[in-house]
Image (cartoon, rainbow, N blue to C red; front, top):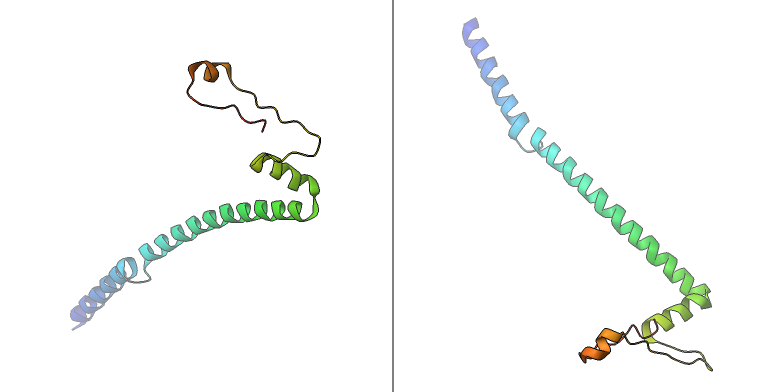
Length: 106
């Protein structure tokens, strides 16, 4: 009788171990979830850095005329009254006739 009880307990122990290692919420699931958490933390850190950069840029645009002027000059080629626009054309591009232009003074 004691032998059967020991056998039943051994089978129960093996079943619990199998469930611990492979079942839902088992060791493999926990390891996979920890890995996903680390990946998400890395992604969140990248996005936070991007958000901080954008927030600083918005703050500059709200409170600084120089930032607005710099952006207008770089993106749409705006000039102040009295300024003269000069476009520098690369010698190689001009002689080959491929239609490439210089950087437009940007």
